Length: 131
Image 1 (cartoon, rainbow, N blue to C red):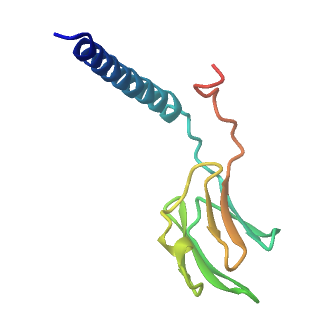
Image 2: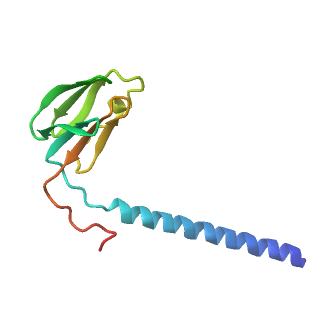
Image 3: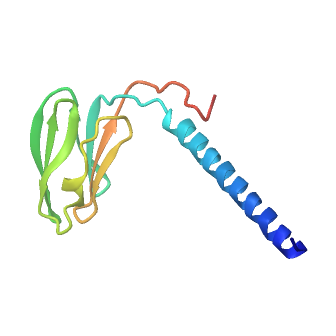
């Protein structure tokens, strides 16, 4: 076996070892950050053009329409979750967004300058990063 072949084999083994170390590190980081404590929300805050449009309890089913010069969104609060039921914006990303119910989760409709945010009065426990 020549010196060049031995060097290639050693490099290949080191590359494989580095690959598995990086995979293990990635899995560890995912486990640390996915262990974050999530707090259920208490109410929904709707803002339009950066101004508070209204706040609604998350535990009471409700459907309402938010209209502005930019367009119209129908927001639905049901079973402790909120979602945008319909909108007349061109991309409908807000309608396709999954329902939200945890503190600080938000649905945004950029064309209509609308945000639907979950707010909680409870403090979250210390998260994995701060411990």
